[in-house]
Length: 213
Image 1: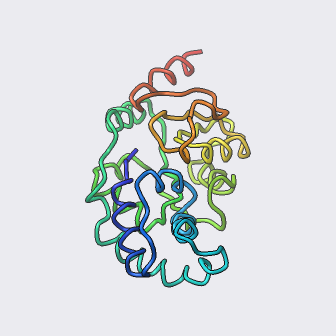
Image 2: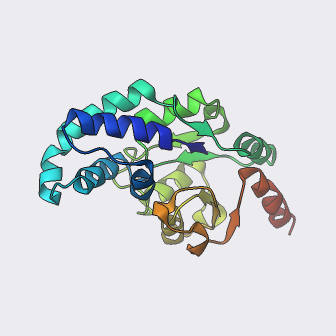
């Protein structure tokens, strides 16, 4: 829903500078995002030349610095993708309860949605630290279905990456992917999904047809 690459770029590189580690490019970040902030930080440290065990030892310090930097700039370098507000408005108009499930920490996710005027669309907002495991594990999606009171087979997962599709398949949810996400630098249309849309406001039309059948 929100292109946060700019926020990642600023917060992560300021963190790496604090640690005296090499910075990363936006192209590097595109390949690293999607599995949560802890994974992003670890990947950046390894990319900069640390062994995995060395990166793990630096992780607590890095995480503390990253949190401080991210919270200071959250949403300032990001933008809502075209068609998102229109799509969410139309989905709500169909009477569908909506939940936001992201691997971003909840302390980052909820303020971002508030800043971008999106939080009111959702009955629930869950972050990467809301449950014991993160996507692509199916647990967060199953818990989200429970919160919505909806069976997984009747709960559509809308995502932008292989992580989302894997979680949906494992949880027993149908899945539609938008084509403008990062997906670790890989073509998203190569992912196993039920459908693809270029903009979120294209989705309500697909669902209206399905609901009419």
